[in-house]
Length: 121
Image (cartoon, rainbow, N blue to C red; front, side, top):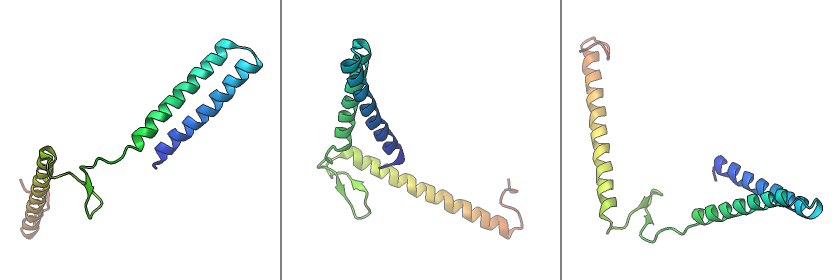
């Protein structure tokens, strides 16, 4: 769990404790109905949000996804959009490698001709 997630879960727990205690104090001890109602509403809202985010975080993995040897998730063979996306990413990676090779070649040629890497135009 990331530190950001830990922070928000801690904040939610503190909110539950503070609003629960505030509602108990305002409603039962002080008989302040508006004040206690606000604490109850904040308590209920926090509990509702926790329930939503807990189920979203624990959603079972889609059965069409598997895990390959590198720890990455791969799509099922039947999903054409994922296959097209994978092909596009592979093509971009190849082009980036070609650009890098061309830059290394130009730097090598410039160094052999006695020019600095940025001096040739």
